[in-house]
Amino acid sequence: MIEKKLQINEEGCSIRCRFFCHDSRKNERSFKRAAIVTHGFGSSKDTAGITNFAQHLTSKYKDDAVIAFDFPCHGEDARKKLLMDECLKYLAIVTDYVKKTLGAEKVYNYSTSFGAYVTLRFLLSKGNPFSRIALRAPAVTIAESMNRYLTEADRSALKKGKEIQVGFDRKMKIDQAFLDDLKTHDVRKSEFFDFADDLIILHGTKDEMIPFEEAKTFAENNVITFIPVEGANHPFQNPKQMALAIHEIVEFFGE
Image (cartoon, rainbow, N blue to C red; front, side, top):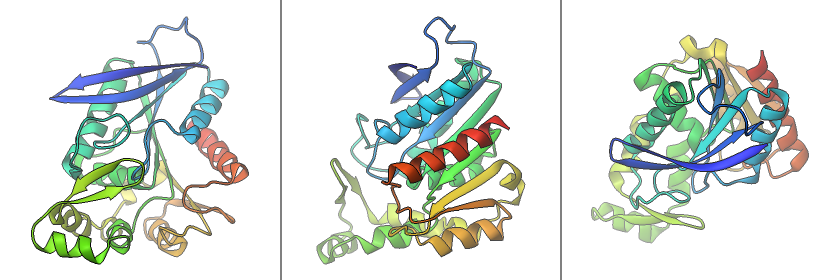
């Protein structure tokens, strides 16, 4: 597998990406199929899970490409304050790049947690440019989940109109407007029937962040194929469970 880093500079954004393909001799502008991969909250494009997925997909389908990118305020991205509109904009720009620059006739989307929430929001606001979508541990309860991790000091600062710092290895700023936006755009209250045929959801039965039953109910309400992964936690830390998820997604993209 060949990997390289690239930047997409469009509309005032500089989006940091990882690009994967099977063969360095292949013309970069002639991929008929490409998969976009998005990461979870506080994570980045540089995870072992993304590398693993790219390895499997490009090994099985040697003419395919994979591109992963950092959301605003994540990984190598330069932004400091997280805004949902910018997350949606990044996904739109990367999708456009895959179609126009890579020449992909079919674009796939593999998204995890926060990235899966962004993808669901994207479908509602911009329609569906993806041939197939696989969501792993989608953050369908994101507003409640984020609220659960706020301290009393955080809540007090937000009430006063101040920004707070959140995140893990890297901190980012959010404000009350960001949290209100998540609550307003609760994906469980929207319908996804139009996208259901091209969508699968995989969720761990031991997910400690996004309740398994919530994801299952969301899938059932929208007639989306739901694949429970026994014993998996939110990040799918067990290698066997991650391998199972990747296998299911690669097979789904190959259909």
